[in-house]
Length: 391
Image (cartoon, rainbow, N blue to C red):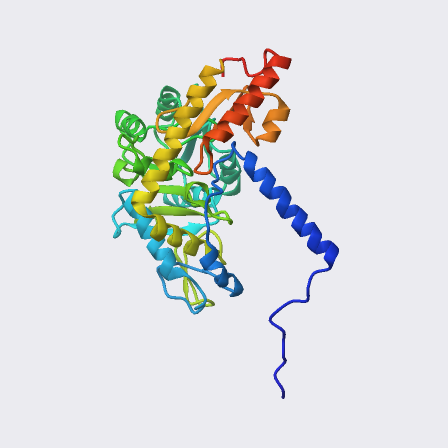
């Protein structure tokens, strides 16, 4: 029997369809020049890794366990996990992790193992928490209570303390946000632990959503407590935000003693099932590994300081234009009063209620901020009340 001679290539696309793709690429390239409102950098280049896209790679199963599916990047994934364990002051012997599809999966993983640790636990999260969290809580059927947030976006510690006091007989599962979506506020882990101590609660679980700030706080001199050194149990950090990736990705890190509760041996692939998804992306661990080894810790620190300086520049320029802008400590999220829809759409700015923000990611330059504020100034001439609120 003769082997089938499949062509590795594909027939060329119809000219009209190729033109459609070309037009789409041109549209995206133009829009990328006005990308200020969301925490994703467009500054990355993974060209040397493109040949790996020609293989059916799959990181199915536990990255720290051998698998019969050999077309994986587990070796590189383990190195990425160890790097992030170092950034978050985790002991390699006590921490386990994997590369996720993004922040939502990392948060789902944290809540999942927290609920498995304390089946009767009660999840506390603030009203400034990411929109995916209520959805996750419904999916895993976890009991929960929303806590008020302060004006700057931090959780309201008094409301948290009073609510926990009412439910002292139920193990608390704290969902702490390390950099809230709209204002970049960081929930204070030390204050949360003090609340547990004040209420004589010895058994509790703290998960941290550090999607963006998890790659900022390790590189600043006076960081708020947020990591395993501060006593947390699990953390989610995004990879496509500050590091950058054409495919969304992130890290989930957790204490091994919690992960062991959910591990199951799967004969089909010859490995342990310890992650949320079965088949997992195998190219994003390579992206993160490549970025870690080409930029390095010093390179990341330089990038973070650039972003923070750009945030300071933005606040100063807003104030110069008479617009009340502000930001939280160690945050690159600059908050200001909500503008007209035309400006929000042009610059792809996130808004909520009466505020909007820009996020000074690595691709943001002074010219972007200058042009945005020039647009706002022009709009204010036509409509004096535009962006004139208190923020």
